[in-house]
Image (cartoon, rainbow, N blue to C red; front, side, top):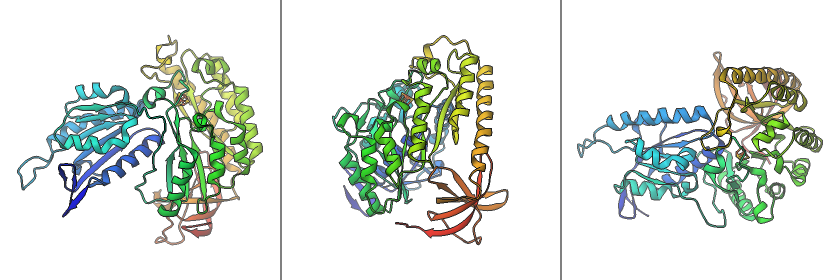
Length: 472
Ligand code: SF4
């Protein structure tokens, strides 16, 4: 790659400065992939823009898991037809700006060819395992190659990458395992992300050490669809990795997501007891409080196993906060099974949950089940779950009042006309607080804040100590 004036030469093509707009749907894995894509594209003279209308390259990073994200993508993709038609005219050439539209992510992995055939304005589609080849695909598109789809799987034995970051924040997502071998009956992920493959422990430690030393990273989120299955293929484990990362000077906080209850091992529980850097938070999706529903979901654990795990975790770290995911109205869920989920909420005392009414994902076992439930029943059950959880959550959050928490401040915003800054505790709760002066800038500062009031959904605090941007 060579540079000449502001252009960059890639192969036979000149790449002038161009703008890329990206829309990301779904989970943190997708956000992480987006960051990788933007990082690769910056090497091809692309800068990121928030304004779709000025973009030369429009990329959608899609999600097949959530129905809403799915619908939004199709509607946003439809709008790009106008975007191409209305592109401005280059005063030098008199030609319309050539806007390239691409779709990646989970929908593109399974439906890439169909999308290309159906949407005239879509230039190329690419799957989840070829994100790091975005440069080649963009090159092809600018060489005049149109309407192609790349959805192949990486067949190499090792999963080896280097984390790419673009945002200039002290927080980084670090992918440590990709894919999922679980095949829960409702989930499309094993079909869109492939089989589990872990990076080697030594490579991850080197990668994180580089991020801490050279990019100012202080908080790391270890990512994987089934993150606590990490290392099984190499005789390594997530617990081991956490204890190795614990030793890195300059790294302040470590998180990991998303976990499957079946794969929580004793050494992971021990890591929660022994690590000072590991966050006091575990997101452990339970999905249902009924053993019969869990069987139909193919989740491989029972409610009793799950509750025992929570007890172990809380014993290992009494500060531990647990959150979860719940699906309301799985096919043919009986009233009794639903009541078992409400009871589980009482027993588990989650700090927060993400809850959804079941909606079928094409190609999964659950989508083929004859289902006696309707949307009204699902809606009612979802409301009951959310109402019950909010009451539990409010009580738990009241217990925070008067206590001091260390937060990493992320951003400021306006709340009913009042400027407030927002940061996250080790236990992943958001805390809002007022600045000392309107000009105070706390972004990416570590602060100690005392909680002054709390509701089920919001926690307010006051500044106790501003520790600045770096702590040891
Ligand atoms: S563990 Fe189950 S729900 Fe999670 S990604 Fe794998 S198949 Fe999907």
